[in-house]
Amino acid sequence: MRRSAAVVAVAALAAGAFVASAQAATALGEVTKNLTYRCAFPLVGQQDVAATVKITIPDSGTTGVRIVNSDLKITATLSVPIVNALRSFQTATTEGTATADVDAAYDGKNMTIGIPGLKVAKQNVPPAGSTPGTMPVDIQGPTPSLIVYKAGTVSLAAGAVFTAKIDTRKADGTPTALGILNVPCTVKTTTPPQDRSLASVPVTGSNVTPPSTGTAPSQPFDKTLTYNCTFPEVGAVNVSGRVQGTIPATGTVNSRVQPTASIAATLPATVVDALRNHGAATVGGKAVADVTNSYNGTSIAIGIPGTVPSTNVPASGDLTAPISLNTPSVAVGAAGTLALGAGPQLNGTFTPLKADGTPTDLGTFNAPCTLNPGQDAGLGAIVFS
Image 1 (cartoon, one colour):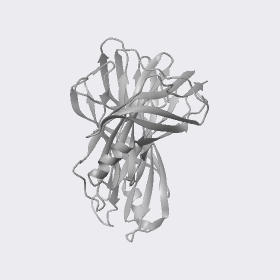
Image 2: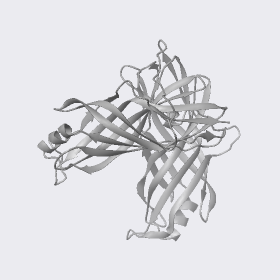
Image 3: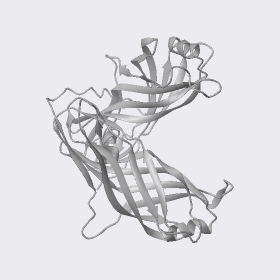
Protein backbone atom coordinates (compact mmCIF):
# COMPACT_ATOMS: atom_id res chain seq x y z
CA MET A 1 0.00 0.00 0.00
CA ARG A 2 1.41 3.37 -0.99
CA ARG A 3 0.98 6.18 1.49
CA SER A 4 2.41 9.65 1.99
CA ALA A 5 2.28 12.80 3.99
CA ALA A 6 3.36 15.03 1.16
CA VAL A 7 4.05 15.39 -2.50
CA VAL A 8 7.51 16.72 -2.29
CA ALA A 9 7.71 16.64 1.43
CA VAL A 10 8.20 12.96 1.78
CA ALA A 11 10.76 13.12 -0.93
CA ALA A 12 13.26 13.87 1.74
CA LEU A 13 12.63 10.44 3.00
CA ALA A 14 13.38 9.20 -0.42
CA ALA A 15 16.12 6.74 -0.83
CA GLY A 16 15.43 5.82 2.67
CA ALA A 17 18.28 7.50 4.33
CA PHE A 18 19.73 10.61 5.76
CA VAL A 19 23.11 11.99 6.58
CA ALA A 20 22.47 14.56 9.24
CA SER A 21 24.10 17.93 9.24
CA ALA A 22 26.76 18.49 11.87
CA GLN A 23 24.20 20.19 14.07
CA ALA A 24 21.62 17.48 13.70
CA ALA A 25 23.11 14.04 13.87
CA THR A 26 26.11 11.74 13.94
CA ALA A 27 26.27 9.46 10.93
CA LEU A 28 26.06 5.73 11.48
CA GLY A 29 27.83 5.04 8.22
CA GLU A 30 26.69 3.05 5.25
CA VAL A 31 23.66 0.81 5.53
CA THR A 32 23.47 -2.14 3.13
CA LYS A 33 20.31 -4.04 2.24
CA ASN A 34 20.21 -7.03 -0.11
CA LEU A 35 16.88 -7.53 -1.90
CA THR A 36 15.53 -9.61 -4.77
CA TYR A 37 13.16 -7.99 -7.28
CA ARG A 38 10.93 -9.53 -9.94
CA CYS A 39 11.38 -7.50 -13.12
CA ALA A 40 9.57 -7.76 -16.46
CA PHE A 41 11.89 -7.87 -19.49
CA PRO A 42 11.03 -8.23 -23.18
CA LEU A 43 11.53 -11.71 -24.59
CA VAL A 44 12.37 -13.39 -21.28
CA GLY A 45 9.44 -12.15 -19.18
CA GLN A 46 9.62 -12.07 -15.38
CA GLN A 47 13.13 -12.51 -14.04
CA ASP A 48 14.70 -12.35 -10.59
CA VAL A 49 17.14 -9.45 -10.16
CA ALA A 50 19.36 -9.36 -7.09
CA ALA A 51 20.05 -5.83 -5.84
CA THR A 52 22.24 -4.33 -3.13
CA VAL A 53 20.99 -1.00 -1.77
CA LYS A 54 23.50 1.25 0.00
CA ILE A 55 22.80 4.51 1.81
CA THR A 56 24.12 6.45 4.80
CA ILE A 57 21.75 7.03 7.71
CA PRO A 58 22.18 9.18 10.84
CA ASP A 59 21.52 7.96 14.33
CA SER A 60 19.47 11.06 15.28
CA GLY A 61 18.09 14.41 14.19
CA THR A 62 16.98 17.70 15.75
CA THR A 63 13.71 19.55 15.22
CA GLY A 64 14.01 22.51 12.89
CA VAL A 65 17.50 21.52 11.71
CA ARG A 66 18.06 20.25 8.19
CA ILE A 67 18.95 16.59 7.77
CA VAL A 68 21.04 16.17 4.63
CA ASN A 69 20.89 12.78 3.00
CA SER A 70 23.51 10.90 1.03
CA ASP A 71 23.13 9.65 -2.52
CA LEU A 72 21.29 6.39 -3.01
CA LYS A 73 23.43 3.65 -4.54
CA ILE A 74 22.05 0.42 -5.99
CA THR A 75 23.92 -2.41 -7.67
CA ALA A 76 21.62 -4.75 -9.58
CA THR A 77 22.76 -8.02 -11.13
CA LEU A 78 21.08 -9.05 -14.40
CA SER A 79 20.68 -12.80 -14.83
CA VAL A 80 22.15 -14.89 -17.66
CA PRO A 81 18.82 -15.10 -19.58
CA ILE A 82 18.53 -11.29 -19.53
CA VAL A 83 22.12 -10.86 -20.73
CA ASN A 84 21.64 -13.45 -23.48
CA ALA A 85 18.51 -11.62 -24.67
CA LEU A 86 20.39 -8.32 -24.79
CA ARG A 87 23.25 -9.92 -26.70
CA SER A 88 20.85 -11.54 -29.21
CA PHE A 89 19.91 -8.02 -30.32
CA GLN A 90 23.58 -7.00 -30.66
CA THR A 91 23.43 -4.88 -27.52
CA ALA A 92 26.91 -3.70 -26.61
CA THR A 93 26.09 -1.11 -23.94
CA THR A 94 23.20 -0.12 -21.71
CA GLU A 95 22.46 3.02 -19.68
CA GLY A 96 19.40 4.95 -18.58
CA THR A 97 17.38 6.38 -15.72
CA ALA A 98 15.44 4.94 -12.81
CA THR A 99 12.87 5.76 -10.15
CA ALA A 100 12.90 4.07 -6.74
CA ASP A 101 10.05 3.96 -4.24
CA VAL A 102 10.77 4.53 -0.57
CA ASP A 103 8.44 3.88 2.36
CA ALA A 104 8.59 6.23 5.33
CA ALA A 105 6.65 6.73 8.54
CA TYR A 106 6.65 9.85 10.72
CA ASP A 107 4.19 11.39 13.18
CA GLY A 108 1.63 8.65 12.63
CA LYS A 109 1.70 9.02 8.83
CA ASN A 110 2.85 6.26 6.49
CA MET A 111 4.11 7.28 3.11
CA THR A 112 5.50 6.01 -0.18
CA ILE A 113 7.20 8.25 -2.67
CA GLY A 114 8.81 7.62 -6.05
CA ILE A 115 12.21 9.27 -6.32
CA PRO A 116 13.19 10.15 -9.89
CA GLY A 117 16.52 11.30 -11.22
CA LEU A 118 18.53 8.15 -10.55
CA LYS A 119 21.14 7.42 -13.21
CA VAL A 120 21.77 3.94 -14.58
CA ALA A 121 25.47 4.00 -15.42
CA LYS A 122 26.72 2.99 -18.85
CA GLN A 123 27.64 -0.68 -18.77
CA ASN A 124 29.21 -3.02 -21.33
CA VAL A 125 27.29 -6.22 -22.05
CA PRO A 126 29.65 -9.14 -21.31
CA PRO A 127 30.66 -11.19 -24.35
CA ALA A 128 29.33 -14.66 -25.04
CA GLY A 129 31.07 -17.35 -23.02
CA SER A 130 32.15 -15.02 -20.26
CA THR A 131 31.99 -16.20 -16.66
CA PRO A 132 29.76 -15.87 -14.67
CA GLY A 133 27.68 -14.50 -17.54
CA THR A 134 25.67 -12.15 -15.35
CA MET A 135 25.86 -8.36 -15.66
CA PRO A 136 26.22 -5.82 -12.83
CA VAL A 137 24.42 -2.50 -13.24
CA ASP A 138 25.22 0.52 -11.07
CA ILE A 139 22.45 2.98 -10.21
CA GLN A 140 22.98 6.19 -8.25
CA GLY A 141 21.32 9.52 -7.63
CA PRO A 142 20.72 12.40 -5.22
CA THR A 143 18.00 12.33 -2.61
CA PRO A 144 16.23 15.20 -0.86
CA SER A 145 17.02 16.74 2.50
CA LEU A 146 14.47 17.06 5.29
CA ILE A 147 13.39 19.37 8.11
CA VAL A 148 10.82 18.15 10.66
CA TYR A 149 9.30 20.49 13.20
CA LYS A 150 8.30 18.26 16.10
CA ALA A 151 9.97 15.40 17.91
CA GLY A 152 9.31 11.87 16.76
CA THR A 153 10.81 8.95 14.88
CA VAL A 154 11.34 8.70 11.15
CA SER A 155 11.22 5.07 10.03
CA LEU A 156 12.57 4.20 6.61
CA ALA A 157 12.30 1.20 4.30
CA ALA A 158 13.13 0.36 0.71
CA GLY A 159 9.96 0.65 -1.35
CA ALA A 160 8.29 -2.27 -3.06
CA VAL A 161 8.48 -0.74 -6.56
CA PHE A 162 11.44 0.14 -8.76
CA THR A 163 11.29 1.13 -12.44
CA ALA A 164 13.99 1.74 -15.02
CA LYS A 165 14.25 2.98 -18.59
CA ILE A 166 17.22 1.36 -20.32
CA ASP A 167 18.71 2.60 -23.59
CA THR A 168 20.24 -0.31 -25.53
CA ARG A 169 23.01 0.47 -28.03
CA LYS A 170 25.09 -1.46 -30.54
CA ALA A 171 28.89 -1.27 -30.61
CA ASP A 172 28.72 1.57 -33.16
CA GLY A 173 26.49 3.59 -30.84
CA THR A 174 23.28 3.18 -32.81
CA PRO A 175 20.07 1.97 -31.10
CA THR A 176 19.28 -1.73 -31.12
CA ALA A 177 15.89 -3.06 -32.24
CA LEU A 178 15.01 -3.20 -28.55
CA GLY A 179 15.29 0.57 -28.30
CA ILE A 180 14.58 1.92 -24.82
CA LEU A 181 13.33 -0.77 -22.46
CA ASN A 182 10.75 0.03 -19.78
CA VAL A 183 11.54 -2.35 -16.92
CA PRO A 184 9.04 -2.41 -14.02
CA CYS A 185 10.19 -4.24 -10.89
CA THR A 186 8.62 -5.18 -7.57
CA VAL A 187 10.19 -6.74 -4.50
CA LYS A 188 9.79 -10.49 -4.89
CA THR A 189 7.14 -12.13 -2.71
CA THR A 190 8.76 -14.69 -0.45
CA THR A 191 7.96 -16.67 2.68
CA PRO A 192 8.84 -15.10 5.05
CA PRO A 193 8.65 -11.68 3.33
CA GLN A 194 11.90 -9.91 2.59
CA ASP A 195 12.95 -7.40 5.21
CA ARG A 196 12.90 -3.99 3.50
CA SER A 197 13.48 -1.90 6.64
CA LEU A 198 16.49 0.41 6.66
CA ALA A 199 16.48 2.41 9.90
CA SER A 200 14.53 4.36 12.50
CA VAL A 201 15.89 7.85 13.19
CA PRO A 202 14.80 9.58 16.41
CA VAL A 203 14.31 13.35 16.09
CA THR A 204 14.46 15.25 19.38
CA GLY A 205 14.06 18.85 20.52
CA SER A 206 11.33 21.36 21.24
CA ASN A 207 8.54 21.80 18.70
CA VAL A 208 9.29 24.48 16.10
CA THR A 209 6.68 26.56 14.30
CA PRO A 210 6.73 25.43 10.65
CA PRO A 211 6.68 27.83 7.69
CA SER A 212 3.29 28.70 6.20
CA THR A 213 2.15 26.82 3.10
CA GLY A 214 0.29 29.95 1.97
CA THR A 215 -2.85 30.07 -0.13
CA ALA A 216 -3.25 27.54 -2.94
CA PRO A 217 -3.27 29.31 -6.34
CA SER A 218 -5.16 28.19 -9.42
CA GLN A 219 -3.51 25.46 -11.47
CA PRO A 220 -1.19 25.27 -13.24
CA PHE A 221 0.66 27.63 -10.91
CA ASP A 222 2.97 30.38 -12.11
CA LYS A 223 4.25 32.80 -9.52
CA THR A 224 7.31 34.91 -8.83
CA LEU A 225 8.97 34.94 -5.41
CA THR A 226 11.92 36.92 -4.13
CA TYR A 227 14.84 35.34 -2.29
CA ASN A 228 17.80 36.99 -0.59
CA CYS A 229 20.97 35.24 -1.79
CA THR A 230 24.65 35.56 -0.96
CA PHE A 231 27.24 35.42 -3.77
CA PRO A 232 31.05 35.63 -3.69
CA GLU A 233 32.36 39.21 -3.92
CA VAL A 234 28.85 40.62 -4.39
CA GLY A 235 27.39 39.67 -1.01
CA ALA A 236 23.64 39.59 -0.30
CA VAL A 237 21.31 40.53 -3.17
CA ASN A 238 17.68 39.84 -4.03
CA VAL A 239 17.04 37.15 -6.65
CA SER A 240 13.72 36.72 -8.42
CA GLY A 241 12.53 33.14 -8.80
CA ARG A 242 9.69 32.28 -11.19
CA VAL A 243 8.15 29.05 -9.92
CA GLN A 244 5.98 27.08 -12.36
CA GLY A 245 4.32 23.68 -12.34
CA THR A 246 1.18 21.72 -11.73
CA ILE A 247 -0.25 20.36 -8.47
CA PRO A 248 -3.29 18.14 -9.08
CA ALA A 249 -6.39 19.41 -7.27
CA THR A 250 -7.56 15.93 -6.29
CA GLY A 251 -6.13 12.48 -5.72
CA THR A 252 -7.32 9.03 -4.79
CA VAL A 253 -6.09 7.29 -1.66
CA ASN A 254 -3.44 4.66 -2.48
CA SER A 255 -3.04 5.92 -6.07
CA ARG A 256 0.12 7.63 -7.27
CA VAL A 257 0.04 11.39 -7.96
CA GLN A 258 2.74 13.18 -9.96
CA PRO A 259 3.24 16.93 -9.50
CA THR A 260 5.65 18.98 -11.62
CA ALA A 261 7.78 21.98 -10.72
CA SER A 262 10.58 24.12 -12.15
CA ILE A 263 12.23 27.39 -11.21
CA ALA A 264 13.79 30.16 -13.29
CA ALA A 265 16.13 32.18 -11.07
CA THR A 266 17.09 35.62 -12.37
CA LEU A 267 20.55 36.65 -11.16
CA PRO A 268 20.91 40.44 -11.06
CA ALA A 269 23.43 42.35 -13.16
CA THR A 270 25.81 42.80 -10.22
CA VAL A 271 26.24 39.02 -9.98
CA VAL A 272 26.59 38.65 -13.74
CA ASP A 273 29.21 41.42 -13.81
CA ALA A 274 31.23 39.55 -11.17
CA LEU A 275 31.06 36.34 -13.21
CA ARG A 276 32.14 38.14 -16.36
CA ASN A 277 34.97 39.91 -14.53
CA HIS A 278 36.41 36.47 -13.76
CA GLY A 279 36.20 35.37 -17.39
CA ALA A 280 33.05 33.27 -17.09
CA ALA A 281 31.40 32.42 -20.42
CA THR A 282 28.92 29.91 -19.02
CA VAL A 283 27.61 28.90 -15.62
CA GLY A 284 25.79 25.77 -14.46
CA GLY A 285 25.53 23.45 -11.50
CA LYS A 286 22.91 22.11 -9.16
CA ALA A 287 20.35 23.39 -6.69
CA VAL A 288 18.15 22.38 -3.79
CA ALA A 289 14.71 23.99 -3.48
CA ASP A 290 12.69 23.71 -0.28
CA VAL A 291 9.00 22.88 -0.37
CA THR A 292 6.87 22.95 2.78
CA ASN A 293 3.76 20.87 3.26
CA SER A 294 0.99 20.41 5.74
CA TYR A 295 -0.98 17.16 5.73
CA ASN A 296 -3.42 16.08 8.41
CA GLY A 297 -1.56 17.95 11.14
CA THR A 298 1.97 17.11 10.05
CA SER A 299 4.34 19.73 8.59
CA ILE A 300 7.64 18.98 6.87
CA ALA A 301 10.04 20.99 4.72
CA ILE A 302 11.80 19.13 1.95
CA GLY A 303 14.88 20.10 -0.04
CA ILE A 304 14.28 18.80 -3.56
CA PRO A 305 17.47 18.35 -5.60
CA GLY A 306 17.68 19.70 -9.12
CA THR A 307 20.09 20.61 -11.89
CA VAL A 308 21.08 23.97 -13.38
CA PRO A 309 22.02 23.37 -17.02
CA SER A 310 24.90 25.30 -18.54
CA THR A 311 23.75 28.85 -19.35
CA ASN A 312 25.60 31.50 -21.32
CA VAL A 313 26.76 34.55 -19.37
CA PRO A 314 25.32 37.58 -21.23
CA ALA A 315 27.37 40.57 -22.28
CA SER A 316 25.31 42.76 -19.96
CA GLY A 317 22.22 42.73 -17.77
CA ASP A 318 20.60 39.91 -15.78
CA LEU A 319 21.01 36.17 -16.24
CA THR A 320 18.11 33.74 -15.93
CA ALA A 321 19.21 30.27 -14.79
CA PRO A 322 16.64 27.46 -15.17
CA ILE A 323 16.41 24.88 -12.39
CA SER A 324 14.96 21.47 -13.21
CA LEU A 325 13.72 19.75 -10.05
CA ASN A 326 13.54 15.98 -9.46
CA THR A 327 9.95 16.17 -8.23
CA PRO A 328 8.83 12.83 -6.78
CA SER A 329 5.51 11.09 -7.20
CA VAL A 330 3.46 10.33 -4.11
CA ALA A 331 0.54 8.25 -2.88
CA VAL A 332 -1.36 8.67 0.39
CA GLY A 333 -3.05 6.06 2.53
CA ALA A 334 -5.69 8.23 4.20
CA ALA A 335 -8.15 10.91 3.09
CA GLY A 336 -7.13 14.51 3.74
CA THR A 337 -5.81 17.72 2.20
CA LEU A 338 -2.16 18.21 1.39
CA ALA A 339 -1.13 21.89 1.17
CA LEU A 340 2.17 22.76 -0.50
CA GLY A 341 4.21 25.96 -0.45
CA ALA A 342 7.61 27.25 -1.47
CA GLY A 343 9.98 26.52 1.38
CA PRO A 344 12.34 28.71 3.39
CA GLN A 345 15.48 28.13 1.29
CA LEU A 346 16.64 27.84 -2.31
CA ASN A 347 20.33 27.01 -2.47
CA GLY A 348 22.52 26.80 -5.55
CA THR A 349 25.97 25.38 -6.23
CA PHE A 350 27.47 26.96 -9.34
CA THR A 351 30.57 26.32 -11.47
CA PRO A 352 31.38 29.13 -13.93
CA LEU A 353 33.52 28.14 -16.91
CA LYS A 354 35.64 30.11 -19.36
CA ALA A 355 35.01 29.96 -23.11
CA ASP A 356 37.53 27.11 -23.42
CA GLY A 357 35.62 25.06 -20.83
CA THR A 358 38.12 25.45 -18.00
CA PRO A 359 37.02 26.70 -14.55
CA THR A 360 37.41 30.33 -13.59
CA ASP A 361 39.32 31.33 -10.45
CA LEU A 362 35.97 31.46 -8.65
CA GLY A 363 35.92 27.66 -8.76
CA THR A 364 32.69 26.06 -7.57
CA PHE A 365 30.79 28.18 -5.08
CA ASN A 366 27.59 27.97 -3.03
CA ALA A 367 24.88 30.62 -3.16
CA PRO A 368 22.56 30.17 -0.15
CA CYS A 369 19.17 31.87 -0.52
CA THR A 370 16.36 32.58 1.95
CA LEU A 371 12.76 33.34 0.98
CA ASN A 372 12.01 36.95 1.85
CA PRO A 373 9.21 37.33 4.45
CA GLY A 374 5.73 38.63 3.70
CA GLN A 375 5.15 36.65 0.49
CA ASP A 376 2.37 34.15 -0.19
CA ALA A 377 4.33 30.96 -0.80
CA GLY A 378 1.33 28.78 -1.68
CA LEU A 379 1.82 26.37 -4.61
CA GLY A 380 -1.23 24.15 -4.42
CA ALA A 381 -3.42 21.78 -2.42
CA ILE A 382 -4.50 18.22 -3.17
CA VAL A 383 -7.70 16.81 -1.70
CA PHE A 384 -7.34 13.03 -1.35
CA SER A 385 -10.46 10.91 -1.04
